[in-house]
Length: 186
Image (cartoon, rainbow, N blue to C red; front, side):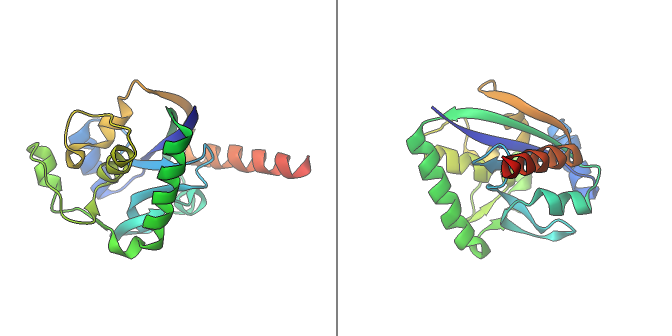
Protein backbone atom coordinates (compact mmCIF):
# COMPACT_ATOMS: atom_id res chain seq x y z
CA UNK A 1 0.00 0.00 0.00
CA UNK A 2 0.98 3.58 -0.67
CA UNK A 3 0.08 6.84 1.06
CA UNK A 4 -1.42 10.07 -0.18
CA UNK A 5 -1.73 13.14 2.02
CA UNK A 6 -4.29 15.80 2.75
CA UNK A 7 -3.40 19.12 4.31
CA UNK A 8 -5.98 21.22 6.10
CA UNK A 9 -5.24 24.92 6.20
CA UNK A 10 -6.47 27.67 8.50
CA UNK A 11 -5.54 31.12 7.29
CA UNK A 12 -6.99 34.41 8.52
CA UNK A 13 -9.14 36.65 6.38
CA UNK A 14 -12.70 37.74 5.72
CA UNK A 15 -13.61 35.00 3.22
CA UNK A 16 -11.97 32.33 5.38
CA UNK A 17 -13.90 33.51 8.44
CA UNK A 18 -17.20 33.11 6.55
CA UNK A 19 -16.26 29.59 5.40
CA UNK A 20 -15.11 28.71 8.92
CA UNK A 21 -18.52 29.69 10.33
CA UNK A 22 -20.46 27.81 7.64
CA UNK A 23 -18.53 24.51 7.81
CA UNK A 24 -17.97 24.64 11.57
CA UNK A 25 -14.30 23.62 11.73
CA UNK A 26 -11.14 25.72 12.04
CA UNK A 27 -9.69 24.56 8.71
CA UNK A 28 -11.12 26.24 5.61
CA UNK A 29 -8.97 24.73 2.86
CA UNK A 30 -7.93 21.22 1.81
CA UNK A 31 -4.90 20.30 -0.28
CA UNK A 32 -3.99 17.00 -1.96
CA UNK A 33 -0.33 15.96 -1.75
CA UNK A 34 1.75 13.07 -2.97
CA UNK A 35 4.25 13.45 -0.10
CA UNK A 36 4.18 14.18 3.62
CA UNK A 37 6.40 17.24 3.16
CA UNK A 38 3.82 18.88 0.84
CA UNK A 39 6.41 19.48 -1.88
CA UNK A 40 4.02 17.92 -4.43
CA UNK A 41 0.80 19.46 -3.10
CA UNK A 42 -2.00 20.87 -5.25
CA UNK A 43 -5.31 22.60 -4.72
CA UNK A 44 -7.87 24.98 -6.09
CA UNK A 45 -7.33 28.17 -4.16
CA UNK A 46 -5.36 31.39 -4.24
CA UNK A 47 -2.88 31.58 -7.11
CA UNK A 48 -0.90 34.02 -4.98
CA UNK A 49 -1.30 33.75 -1.18
CA UNK A 50 -1.39 37.53 -0.84
CA UNK A 51 -4.18 38.07 -3.40
CA UNK A 52 -7.53 36.53 -2.36
CA UNK A 53 -9.42 37.40 -5.55
CA UNK A 54 -7.23 35.52 -8.04
CA UNK A 55 -8.03 31.84 -7.57
CA UNK A 56 -7.59 28.65 -9.55
CA UNK A 57 -5.55 25.46 -9.63
CA UNK A 58 -2.06 25.77 -8.21
CA UNK A 59 0.84 23.96 -6.67
CA UNK A 60 1.01 24.87 -2.99
CA UNK A 61 4.16 26.49 -1.63
CA UNK A 62 4.19 26.40 2.17
CA UNK A 63 7.03 28.93 2.44
CA UNK A 64 5.11 31.50 0.38
CA UNK A 65 1.96 30.87 2.41
CA UNK A 66 3.88 31.29 5.68
CA UNK A 67 5.36 34.59 4.43
CA UNK A 68 1.84 35.99 3.94
CA UNK A 69 0.16 34.19 6.86
CA UNK A 70 2.84 33.74 9.56
CA UNK A 71 0.24 32.43 12.05
CA UNK A 72 -1.47 29.93 9.72
CA UNK A 73 -2.29 26.54 11.19
CA UNK A 74 -1.93 23.25 9.33
CA UNK A 75 -3.05 19.72 9.85
CA UNK A 76 -1.61 16.96 7.65
CA UNK A 77 -3.15 13.51 7.44
CA UNK A 78 -2.35 10.45 5.39
CA UNK A 79 -4.54 7.81 3.88
CA UNK A 80 -3.94 4.52 2.13
CA UNK A 81 -4.17 3.93 -1.60
CA UNK A 82 -2.74 1.44 -4.06
CA UNK A 83 0.49 2.09 -5.96
CA UNK A 84 -1.52 2.31 -9.20
CA UNK A 85 -3.90 4.87 -7.70
CA UNK A 86 -1.04 7.01 -6.43
CA UNK A 87 0.75 6.96 -9.81
CA UNK A 88 -2.46 7.81 -11.63
CA UNK A 89 -3.32 10.64 -9.22
CA UNK A 90 0.21 12.07 -9.54
CA UNK A 91 0.00 11.97 -13.35
CA UNK A 92 -3.41 13.61 -13.31
CA UNK A 93 -2.27 16.37 -10.94
CA UNK A 94 0.74 17.13 -13.15
CA UNK A 95 -1.52 17.28 -16.20
CA UNK A 96 -3.88 19.65 -14.38
CA UNK A 97 -0.92 21.78 -13.36
CA UNK A 98 0.26 22.05 -16.97
CA UNK A 99 -3.23 23.29 -17.85
CA UNK A 100 -3.78 25.19 -14.60
CA UNK A 101 -5.11 28.36 -16.26
CA UNK A 102 -8.16 26.34 -17.37
CA UNK A 103 -9.23 25.65 -13.78
CA UNK A 104 -11.12 28.18 -11.69
CA UNK A 105 -12.76 28.52 -8.30
CA UNK A 106 -16.49 27.75 -8.34
CA UNK A 107 -17.87 30.82 -6.61
CA UNK A 108 -21.30 30.29 -8.19
CA UNK A 109 -21.45 26.82 -6.63
CA UNK A 110 -21.11 27.98 -3.02
CA UNK A 111 -24.84 28.64 -2.43
CA UNK A 112 -25.59 25.22 -3.94
CA UNK A 113 -23.42 23.62 -1.25
CA UNK A 114 -25.45 25.38 1.44
CA UNK A 115 -28.70 24.05 -0.02
CA UNK A 116 -27.19 20.61 -0.79
CA UNK A 117 -27.94 20.86 -4.53
CA UNK A 118 -25.28 19.25 -6.77
CA UNK A 119 -23.80 21.80 -9.17
CA UNK A 120 -20.91 21.50 -11.59
CA UNK A 121 -19.61 24.10 -13.99
CA UNK A 122 -16.87 22.69 -16.26
CA UNK A 123 -13.38 23.16 -14.77
CA UNK A 124 -14.73 25.15 -11.79
CA UNK A 125 -14.15 23.65 -8.34
CA UNK A 126 -13.88 24.41 -4.67
CA UNK A 127 -10.77 23.02 -2.99
CA UNK A 128 -12.66 20.04 -1.59
CA UNK A 129 -14.69 19.30 -4.73
CA UNK A 130 -11.49 19.19 -6.79
CA UNK A 131 -9.79 16.77 -4.39
CA UNK A 132 -12.92 14.61 -4.23
CA UNK A 133 -13.26 14.51 -8.02
CA UNK A 134 -9.59 13.52 -8.52
CA UNK A 135 -9.86 10.78 -5.91
CA UNK A 136 -13.13 9.45 -7.34
CA UNK A 137 -11.68 9.36 -10.87
CA UNK A 138 -8.97 7.13 -9.45
CA UNK A 139 -11.23 4.69 -7.63
CA UNK A 140 -11.19 6.29 -4.18
CA UNK A 141 -14.80 7.04 -3.28
CA UNK A 142 -15.04 8.48 0.21
CA UNK A 143 -18.42 10.19 0.34
CA UNK A 144 -22.01 9.27 -0.42
CA UNK A 145 -22.75 12.54 -2.19
CA UNK A 146 -21.89 14.41 -5.37
CA UNK A 147 -18.32 15.72 -5.40
CA UNK A 148 -19.58 19.32 -5.71
CA UNK A 149 -21.16 19.06 -2.24
CA UNK A 150 -18.05 17.93 -0.38
CA UNK A 151 -16.52 20.45 2.03
CA UNK A 152 -13.24 20.49 3.98
CA UNK A 153 -15.30 19.32 6.97
CA UNK A 154 -16.11 16.05 5.17
CA UNK A 155 -12.39 15.35 4.70
CA UNK A 156 -11.65 16.49 8.24
CA UNK A 157 -14.07 13.91 9.64
CA UNK A 158 -12.80 10.95 7.58
CA UNK A 159 -12.00 7.93 9.69
CA UNK A 160 -9.69 6.50 6.99
CA UNK A 161 -6.99 9.06 7.76
CA UNK A 162 -4.19 9.31 10.30
CA UNK A 163 -2.89 12.66 11.54
CA UNK A 164 0.87 13.07 11.07
CA UNK A 165 1.15 16.79 11.91
CA UNK A 166 -0.97 19.49 13.50
CA UNK A 167 0.31 22.90 14.46
CA UNK A 168 1.61 26.12 13.02
CA UNK A 169 2.75 26.30 9.42
CA UNK A 170 5.99 27.79 10.73
CA UNK A 171 6.65 24.66 12.80
CA UNK A 172 5.73 22.44 9.85
CA UNK A 173 8.14 24.26 7.52
CA UNK A 174 10.88 24.18 10.14
CA UNK A 175 10.43 20.42 10.62
CA UNK A 176 10.43 19.75 6.86
CA UNK A 177 13.51 21.83 6.14
CA UNK A 178 15.40 20.41 9.12
CA UNK A 179 14.70 16.91 7.76
CA UNK A 180 15.79 17.94 4.26
CA UNK A 181 18.98 19.48 5.68
CA UNK A 182 19.71 16.32 7.65
CA UNK A 183 19.20 14.22 4.49
CA UNK A 184 21.74 16.35 2.59
CA UNK A 185 24.31 15.99 5.39
CA UNK A 186 24.11 12.17 5.29
